[in-house]
Picture 1 (cartoon, one colour):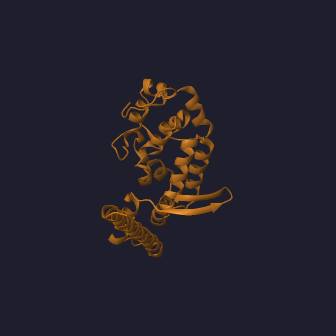
Picture 2: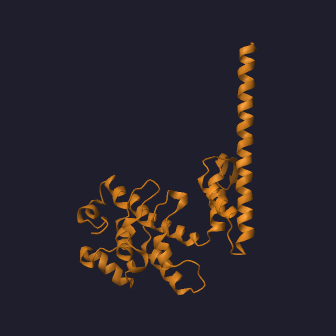
Picture 3: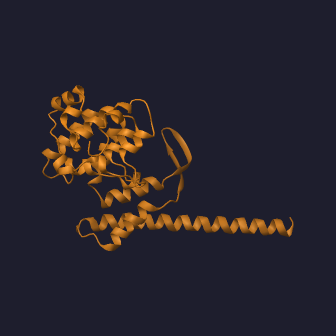
Length: 233
């Protein structure tokens, strides 16, 4: 092996060593944050350290790969960092669990599940979340998207209509008959006075749900033409 090749090999080994060390340090910090968040939650006194830790966990752009085996077989390079990041966040923000579940339902078009979750939250006095907080929620692990962003992104027109009924200032007559009938069938009252207009929410890139819809076509076209997605309409 030439000196040049030896030098290149040494450099590659050094870079690999430094990268591995950096990943382990990052993982250690995240795990420490997770433990610290869990230990201090019982006191209900979040400190500056806790808040900084939470932000650091959410904003990291690293990857941590592991060998993972389950009934589906071996995954030799599974990135476990997203799962660690999510758990650390939820330890400090337990009220986000139902909110994130609600957003999954929005993505899947599960209107009955959405209604049941909102009703259950309002009926349970011990629940830390509420229908209002669920509708206002923007997920920091998903680019600060609101439920309306999620519904539009997944072309869930009926879900978007329901969210607009619950949490927008659009007048009742602006909604199609089927949307009003759905709201009446589930006994849903409008919560805009408590939640504000969901159409005004911006993601981490400054985009509204209406701007999401403008990037796509198809089933969302009627919402754009009717102006229901436009704030103030």
